[in-house]
Length: 263
Image (cartoon, rainbow, N blue to C red; front, top):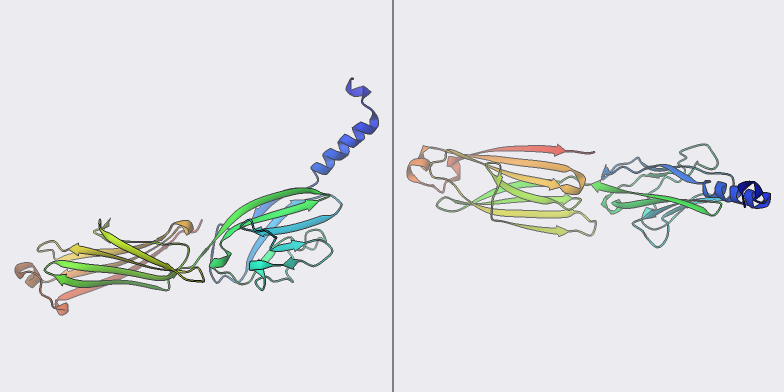
């Protein structure tokens, strides 16, 4: 049977089905990859094109069993789960009656909101969805680099950082190279913030007039780096006669460098 012989009713049905299947499309999903904890005005937006007919917009978090945000015009949005109490429900991203509540304005941002956000648009029984991930960055509140003289030329170096997110990597370096043997311990709090400590032992070279020790904090998932350095200067007494356990003879220079890289 040629196309000219196809019954008009079947052709109309085919065209109708094609139009329905093409009736909904997510044009752009706006979810920032990295956002800082404490931000007060964060908007997640799901831009779409739809046809006439029933419409429902949902936001899902980390593939949960139920949406955390759902809007079916002309009703007001419903919020559940982790987003309860965190949204500005009066926020309208558009004046269009089929788009005004498609976006979420988050007014309380903290590390618990790190994860995957999926926008699902259902129009005339046809669904379109897209997912993007967001990481909430919490920079360090404390950053300490400490020294303790053990004996002779042996020094124990301790670096400590608290209240950071996401999971950190803390490295002690000597002359810009990681010290080969060091121990790192980390603790995660109930609010998902991490405390981390790294310790290493360093043997000071004979007659060195100074040594430079660095502690490097890196948050791989957030492209964030902070560096703290200390320079220990030793006078002629230490060089000529060995280590003297007298803190007054050591001059410590401290430097803190923050290198945040947000894509």
